[in-house]
Length: 484
Image 1 (tube, rainbow, N blue to C red):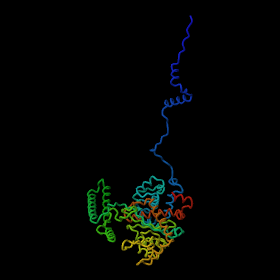
Image 2: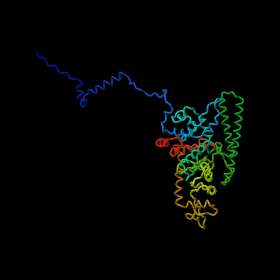
Image 3: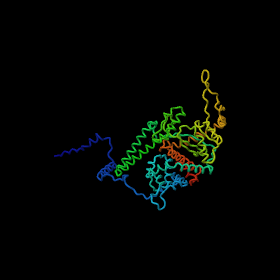
């Protein structure tokens, strides 16, 4: 009996593979290896990595001196401050020898902090105090001395005379080494917004009402403090009393300035009864700003040497017009340097005839001559003849006639081009450093702030023109610091 051959068993997946996955290539050894690795990773668990932990406290062994490079601008500022005479501030310190009392902060630290802050665009005392704890440059200037914002603000607002002396000494030193020639000086005014609102201006009757309310509040707070002197909120009561007293004083200052505002109204032909003063900053005045609007502001005056771009005169006035600011500034520069410049460049808002007469024997004024108004004719207004503004007018003094004749020449027009290149550049740099709104109130404190900006500007110019005056090396080191 013959056996039948057993039928070959077919692979059940063979036909399926040939039908469905026939076009796919068989997995390679590398694919199998990757599969085995993935399985192995799942079995072993999650990967271990070093993750950032930014809340961990670190103790670093480093000195402040190593935080800044040799050409850092903070070193430039400190080298400048070290060479200034701050004797009047040191003489006022009461903590001496074995006398009891807390040590005072070195005035050089406060002065250097504010100079560096101005160059850095920082105008707030609280912000500056924060930077002394967090920023390496400010920490380096402090050198481990703790500084609070009260000390910083008090220093900035109470040293007008000191800053004026430092400015005079620095300008005289630059003139002594030939960096300033005083051949040509440009003066310009800049309106800076005051720290007061337009709604704070009130007439006399309203100010007197607010003054009575402030006095009543002060008396009430004093009575409360006397009735319960040991209360837990003693510090808060003292703060409220101090704030009420300051408000009462500001209102009193506004009432004291009302006669000056009324006199200005009369000169302009307005009613004196409409005079108003600010109960926030009594020295602020409503001035026409660059955009054409009127806001509380101060008129900041800079006089700058055209060749060296060094500020040689600075002032702050409460009048919105520049018409009476020419002669005082010429006198200030003459007092600082012992001589007046040969040529004085101003814009059309300065050359009042009385001012030209006052400085005629000191300097030559270069300013645009205004064109006369059209004359009334029979049928219509007759335009003025070309060049008629340069002809002497009836009643002109000799100085005014010479000014008209001087400006009618190509040489004078060429000289006058230096005014915008000098004065507008200085104003723009002050704006870029934050002189947009006054951080203080009151004319005395505002003048301190403006002189601080002038000193910071001159410091950078000194580093370029005469770095040896502040112990700064000539070359790439000075250039790097001034460009920073």
